[in-house]
Amino acid sequence: MVLPYAAYLRVYEPVTAFPEPARTLWTVYADSRRRPRRIHALGVEHRDAALRMTGSPPEVVPERESRDAYVRRLEDMIYVCPWETRLRSWLAFERFRNEHAAGVAAAFVPPPLSERVMSDFEQWKRAGRSLQPHILTSTWHVPLDWFVPFARTERSLMLGTPETGYRKADDTSGEHAPEEHGPEEHGGNGPATAAPVRTLLYVTSMGEARRRVSAALPVVRENLGDGTGDVYLLSAGRLETLARWLGGFDPRALVELDYGGLVHLLDDRTLRADESVAEMAVALTGMERGEAELTVAMYKRLLARWRPVRALETAN
Image (tube, rainbow, N blue to C red; front, top):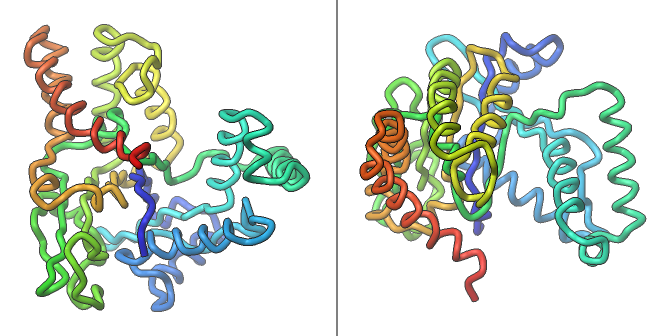
């Protein structure tokens, strides 16, 4: 299966942060042998979405919320990141309608279906339910503000190989390493570029993520301003949005940056050399110290790495 070329920012909350009956349901789910394992979960998500969208008419938003989640374990605690497919589909479709002319949107989704979907969403909002998903998605690139909550030592890079299907190329993340990765779960010896265990992750505690974003905000505001400007560049406005999102979760949570399907656009050498998180940290330090030359050098390195990846979206 070809995965979508997207990256993901996820929050895993401790199972004890969920109210009953969700707490019990997620605890049982975490021990279930039938749930999608970590290395296959993204593929299952994508397959289900593709099946919904290829129907006639397309199923823009699932009728029921997903009962699946990503799971991590740390010491004796279970951490859960619900897929929330229905909520995320509603939010994505709302953005799609806002960003495209009515005629363009109608070419993808018939107007009667579109209006029914949004009517259901408005009714769901009126019920007072949370509009904050545990997962953010970015297609064709990793937004620069997503690098801010992490440190280089929290990286875990895993590369598939034709011989074994699995290789732990780099893992400096220690206790926050992926829950389930290994040769016994690979199930095949395909090319390295398509190996299911080909991943690049960063994981940190919610406390560290909030602290780093909070420290970066005044530095970025002073040097880069509050405006959005180029959507691919760093700004205080985007960092503030990220800070609000992080602030909506349990302070004991874990935060994960997953390069997702983007790893299939990058060869092994490029992934090993990817130091985006470290470069962002150095750029912020340079801004704070007034070292303009260092800041510009790091920023240029980041843009040189990610602009060619983003350009692939419009490649023929």
